[in-house]
Image (cartoon, rainbow, N blue to C red; front, side, top):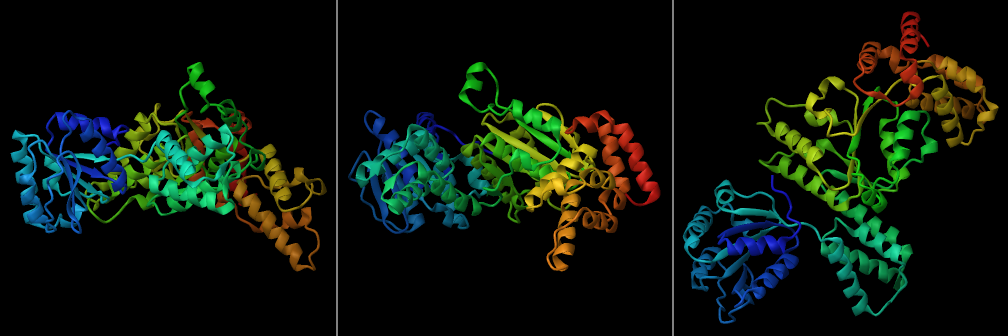
Length: 519
């Protein structure tokens, strides 16, 4: 895997001085790359000759000697014509990945790469395709061209505003948020988003921030593995988890400049382990709302492709995009699926796993990882060691007080007044139920009341539905007991203070539940 170079111009200049003969730049932003190559060549004294080739227009001069006017449109002929350039020329080949399957083209490029070591010619191949033939990869320096920085986006916005002549009433904070919203887009994508916002109202102001974010969401939806979540949950809509909530509140200002000036590092992330239905996914949405950061969901299954190198490239591209958008919350749901190594995938799973672990350990961008998992047995030990996560929380079966709070939250969400219900008896009778099961019980009770002339739902309705539902703690008692035993061994911190203090008592109650066969 190759990391994106934040300063492409500097890296290109060093490569030219070092007489690197073959550079492959992977990017969809052809125009932006050519512009930076031109700037580098023109800074030399005297300027280096730079020519570009494509299969439609042949050769065109970008910088330096203007006398090179060969119009060869055949790739092999074009490669032969390269010898006619000056010995310190930079030759930019566009869309040359279309000819990777031609063995003569590959052989000619390798011959030139070896021959040009004795002069100062450099071939730069621009391609949006991440796959590079092994024969070429061994000869080339491969660069993943990064998306535009905040400074580049700001300069482009100024240029657009200057040429359009429209009024701009952006506040300083609004301008910063618009630039932040555009991070992760290509320059053309950002330019289109800015233009659409301007055209919509004939001006640009703080109200256009949401329009830029919406465009960004559409762009991310086309990516292989990242999904932009605009829907989040307020903390008051999540019942229980007192310890976890306190931990999050302490770090609410963790990504501000004040925290950096104070000397605090950005938090790396948390792992949420526990019983299905206890609110792990809900917690990821809650963190995004509390910290006012964009929430990106990494679809682990979408990382894997059928072509050689495709899975690794998708992983690299997704993590690189997350870093570009940062600060953000990167939610890796059911992370154990990423490590379900297959025996017939030629080591692809291990390589994706290794790259993800290395990134989590070494990342410097403020990407806060929220990893959720249900199956502890599928998690490799190296994932949970210190350094990759700031804390590992276990989400246990909710306690009496938590169940009472969960009933309150879901009753309010469905326009029912909690004061009209006997919350104490509901909390007692729902021993062993997780939050998702409590929510479903309320929904079932509402359907029962709705079918009877749309009457108001009552405590009796909910109690009736509790008796008819078999909770996970009964149907999967062995799995739940194993998970809770993992917490009892001190391998994680309980997300609930009451659960941490009364785990043994909860176990006794749960065992009694198992013996009777009903909650």
